[in-house]
Structures are given as C-alpha cells and as structure tokens.
Image (cartoon, rainbow, N blue to C red; front, side, top):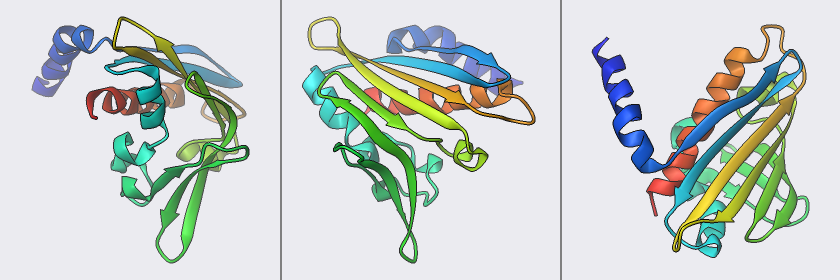
Length: 173
C-alpha cells in the first residue's frame, strides 16, 4: 500500500514537472494505439541524434540481452532496430520504413511479446519544436492483429513501457 502512495505522489507532484503526457488512445478487439509525449531539453537536431542512439536511453531491462549496448538503429531505407544476442544471435525488433530528419521516424514491427503474437505495428516518433531550447518528442504506436485475451491489458502495458523509455530519453543526456 505504501508503494502505491509513493507512486501516486510521484505522478501528482513530479509528473507535471516532467511535462509527460500518456494515453491509450484507442483499444479494441483488433488492436490499440498508444501515444506518449515528453519535452526534451535540446534542439530538434540534438533530439534526432539521441533518438538514433537507442543504446543510450532504452532501458536494458526491456531488451532480450539485458544489455542496452547491444541495441542499434540504422536510419537507412530498410534499416533495422536490432539487438545482438550471445552466440551470434540477434533480434530484429523493428524495420525502418520512414525517415524525415529531424522531424519524423517510423518503424514497423512488434516490440517485445508483440513480436511473438504476429501482430503488425507502426511506431512513429515525431519531433516538434517547443519553447526555445526544447523539443516535444511524441511516440505513437499503432498495433493491429489478434489476441485471444484482447488488447486492453496489452495496451496498458505497452503504454507504460513506452512512457518509461521516453522519460529516460528526456531525462538523460
């Protein structure tokens, strides 16, 4: 119970200071859409460069290897958000399908357990000039397919993980 109080206080007191917004925009029998936004203290060019260095901000706990240094993102046509695994193994998390530097990056695929479900997903990062010296970073992940248990619980979990990653993106340089 005490942990719940601390989480509540964090969200009420620190949440607005971090200027983070999050939402499961839509969820239904065939999929879901989640959207996260953070303010990054830096230019759009700096945010773009950081976006391409996943290993610097993606939490190692949300990787298969438990080592964020194994992540890479190649921003070329057909590029890969990939992860090196032991014994010459790898995970191709997502494919790069749209790059408009320093404004928009779109990737296609299923992150984490979504990959094994065979769903289709599009993760779009949009960088928007904000107050002087800041850039709003929006991540929207649209997922469609089939889940025997429905998508409501999955959507909440994906939203939480994506939000955590964007907070790390904005908080660490």
